[in-house]
Image (cartoon, rainbow, N blue to C red; front, side, top):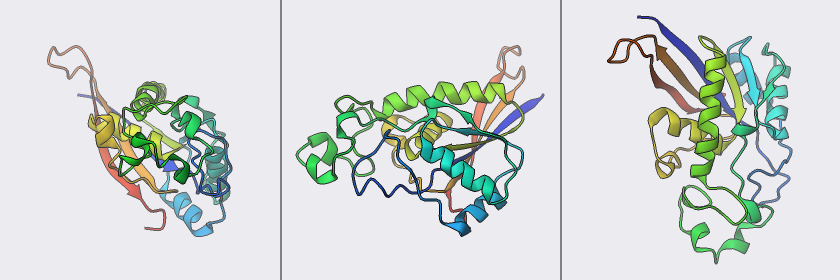
Length: 215
C-alpha cells in the first residue's frame, strides 16, 4: 500500500490593530509584523522550500513576507482567494457595541454569529467551509507528498479543521486559533485501499492545533 501525504502548515496572520476595535472580517487591512521573536520561532518551526499559499488579503502576504524575512527559505506565494476570511457583509466596519441589538450577533460564545447565520450582505461560517474545503482538496492534489505553508485567517483555519475532522459549522467554531499560531493537518491518500480495492481512500490526520510560535 502506498500512502501519499500532503502536510499543511497553517499560520494565522499577524494581529490587525488599525481596525480600532471594528469588525473587519474580509476587509483588506494591514497587520502588525513587529514581533521578532514570534517570526523567528515560525522560521524555525516551519519547513523550508515548502509551497507557500496566502489568501488575497494583504495581511496574509505581509505575514508571509515577515516569515521569509526572518530566515525561512520559501518561494513567492500562490494567492488563493478561496482561503480568504469570512465576509461579515454589512457588519464590517462597525463597532461591536453597534450590533448589540442583533440577536444573532449576541447569541454566540466563540464567533460573531452562529455557524449557519449569514449576516446581511455577507456569508455564514458554513458558507466559508463550503468555499474553503474544495480549495484545500484541490491544492493538496496539486502538491502531493509535500509541504504547504498556508498563511490564512482564523475562520479559514477553523474551516480546514472542519474538513479534517468532519465537523459541522458549530463544532469547528469551538477551536481557538491565535494570531501567528501554527496548525498542522496532514491529508493522507492511500492508493487502492478502498473496500473495492480499486479506489483511493482519503483521510486527515491532526498533528497540532494553535501552537504558539515561541513554544
